[in-house]
Length: 61
Image (cartoon, rainbow, N blue to C red; front, side):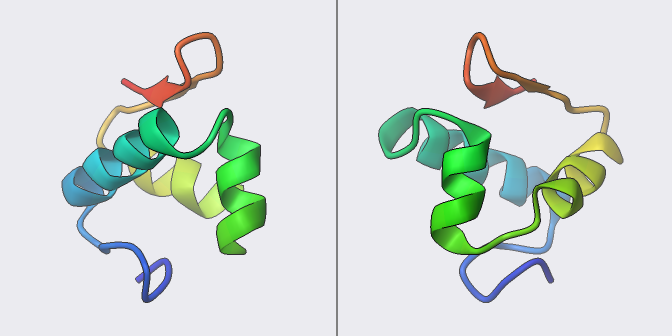
């Protein structure tokens, strides 16, 4: 589990992170700083299902 605030399933995590990026945060760094989450852990977890963060669109895809 990444944190109590986020799901551990990579697909659910991607959905949750993308929703938060769309609705609350202007960047992945801002989300990680605010939620006190290690960016590398998120990127590694989502990378395991082939997803990468795109700062231009501010989402994983």
